[in-house]
Amino acid sequence: MLHYKTNGRPEPSVFLFDALIFAASNFSVQAPEKYLLHQQTLWLSAERCIYWQDQQALIVSDLHFGKTGHFRKSGIAVPQSVYKEDLQRLFSQVQYFQPKQLIIVGDLSHSVANKEVDYFLKWRRDISEIHLQLVKGNHDILKKEWYEQAAITVTTGHLSIDRFCFVHDIKDACEPSANTEYFFSGHIHPCIELNGGGRQSLKFPCFYFNKRFAILPAFGKFTGCAMIDRTTSDDVFAILPSNPARGEFGKVIKV
Image (cartoon, rainbow, N blue to C red; front, side):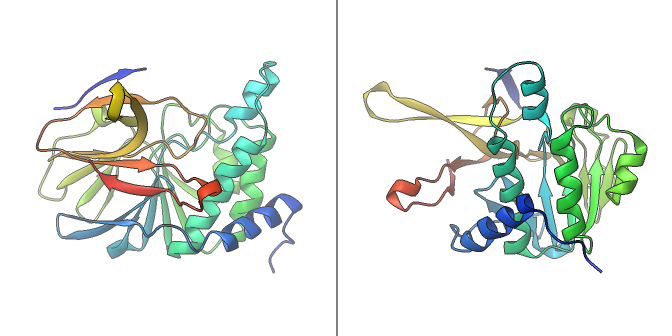
């Protein structure tokens, strides 16, 4: 049981050109962590996403695109580079795994449309060959026309693919059936606390798996997190950050 507490192709813009450079420089990323689940092969990336090898699908959750723009509009000084880095990271993962489909388990956007969401549309045109599916989350309130323009297939409630079912909030999951063996969710933004010497402790975003469902970390870095209270039968993978000064890439470790 899980307990948590809140603690012809268009010419690329300059913004997208920066993303291309970032992606090209990021091919030497730390190798993802292999995880077998119900006879399916998953690769857990330190960039807070999962590659489902059997379906050639990249799975992400809680991107909250446009959030920093809404904060700036409210007078809170949040640099646009925060959002730009998130979009670059997503681009790099698409380039690295070469998926045929992108599954977003809710909260692609944070609120109504703004300039940052428009940047996503430009990026989307550069990967138009990838089938993009969104399971609506509580923050996904953009107009129907926007999703159509972005060529996004939108599902309200659940999205079932093979033996897996995707739902934004695990509390809304239906009961397992003959066609559904396991659930993937988001919404909570899970993290785990790791303790070191001298009573030191740090919190890290994580992938959480129990016998019935998984919770993905928030892909967007401008988000809060919820501590999980894991049991001995749960599998938890902490996501350690990169340290460019030391030449260290982010990594996923089982804890």
